[in-house]
Length: 396
Ligand SMILES: *Cc1c(COP(=O)(O)O)cnc(C)c1O
Image (cartoon, rainbow, N blue to C red):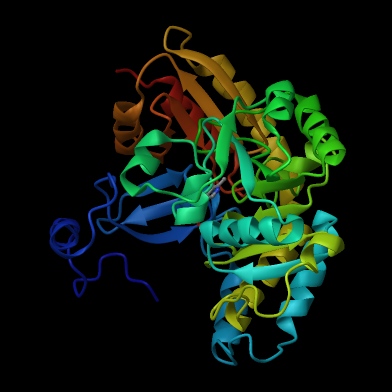
């Protein structure tokens, strides 16, 4: 059992000092050392409690340490953790069948992170079409590996690593007409987030994805949805695409898929998936029994506890409460779908993150002026009310 006040582990200051000395310094980390989590709450090494509206960046949808996921991981870890893809297991097809059912797609490939399945998606699109180009949206985020970075918009992320993979261009998000004009005879695929996450929680007009689907069909261009953040109920439906009813040709799934265990999936239609021939792509760890068991338990718990519906209901409630309680002199809009919520500020919000944390609420600020709230779906109404109280009282 975890002992919150164990003396055998370093203090917060010691851990942060050691991190500064020997871990790559890639993040503006919050000065808090987390130790334990349950439901929508986490505790730091000093025993201070927080309501977690970051959820490991929209990952811990079931809350921290969901007992069914913990049990599945413990049992599978003691049975068989890893096999490589040189052998079959019964867990991988079981998970693939479940995922294709809930997504309406035909085949799945498993990997370990969001960027990894984005890489696979780009390779698959080129292989399936024989074309090279990609069109993505301004302010999009698709990951940090070379391919995923090539279709990520932010100049600051891209510039130091050029030359990137050739053939990417960007069009305004939510504007199907501009996208249509950008497609050429060499465009392999259009890549879109159904709701932009890191870019600031931007929900496009409902008809946008439908219009993009029509344009892609007319021009023989593949449509890739990056559902890495919007997947698994985050927007109040299983997938962000489900709000519009549009089916992509290829879809990337990651963050919430396995209750916090690192895993990702690429799902595609039969005609596209089968364009990958043996040897075209691979992974050593991807789809291993431990990750599959975690994902299967996660999906089962979501179904049994009606957590997708809960994300929709709690999201609606939370947005309404935030609209009622946030001061209009510094919040211009509260937007989102399900429990993927953006509070648009009139100026930089990074300092507010510290103030919320001091009051026991973890939130994240993205695109400098958007407070992103993506709590676990098991967050209670009382916890939501407390978060709204804290966010509503934030002052510069
Ligand atoms: C988080 C995220 C990624 C990258 O996922 P990693 O697991 O960090 O590689 C890609 N696309 C979207 C939309 C994301 O939110």
